[in-house]
Length: 425
Image 1: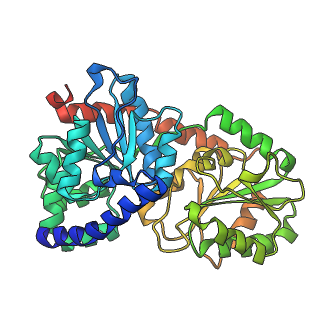
Image 2: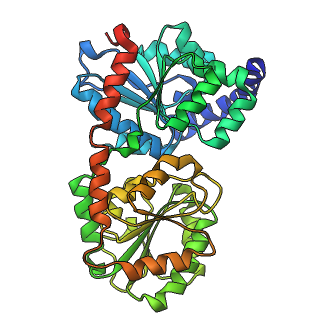
């Protein structure tokens, strides 16, 4: 199985390398980082004591957001951290963070030579894989170089478990090569134990998404100014939407406009490269809209806003009255359900939330979530709008949810430092 995996990575790495060099020479893009080349140096604020950073492996915006919470806590211990990402959106989120990592770069292709270049350049004291990022060659190469690898805020969905179990001799060995698996739930722990036969240290530590992160004050203030003309309206923010979901949302919005004329819509697609597509859908639906990036303040008579920049969704949730989380009405597995719940909103999402099982359970426990289907979306939104009052219980429930996760990040730092022991020095 390992041989087949290496053949596969070699087959795509060769043509992709040519393409990456072309992008570097013609467009000046930093894509050679994916080959372990042209890597950034640690930020100037890094002292000699801090030369060996923690390497956090994230993917896109969601995982980077979790990584940034951990990075902030590590900084309190004078421990630097670097982040590798796989998408431009994830890179932008990390680079523009209020407390950025010591370095941000594209994650190397999972080939030994590329991974070794990154290890030689940064000399990390440990590698932290956010939410069960499985990179077999990275994990094996780190073991060869005696760099401990930890799964952090690990999660294994039932679908992923079935795939991993079918190839247990391969994936079980990969997971077993980690120093420790810090998992989100008992179910994640059970899946990891079955896959690894309990060989590494496996601990239920909760989800780093349980930690409430308020939007920066300047972002929140900009959102308030932008939406000032919608004062007194009901803002429905739909975040991380995927193909197929916008059509359902716009159809629902059109149906509700007559019954709830005060309703306004915010759409934030998961990927920026879909903005033209979603804008076209708004035009076809005959919904008057504005782009977030093109004005300082939305017009009073505009019905919708399309968020076409990264990093504004959390602040937008905080000036909204209800939310929808994407990747749940289509079989994606869902995105962060807790972020709008922390803002005190009733959260609407579809039946495909298997990648967000813990968030689903917490929203059910604190009565903040509403699971619906495409067929019942209009009814669900209408019922919530009709029930919202000045004394809505959602914000009080959100405060209790925030308190639950207040010490989560500090707990994770303690567990990470304990797991790597003397390697932390």
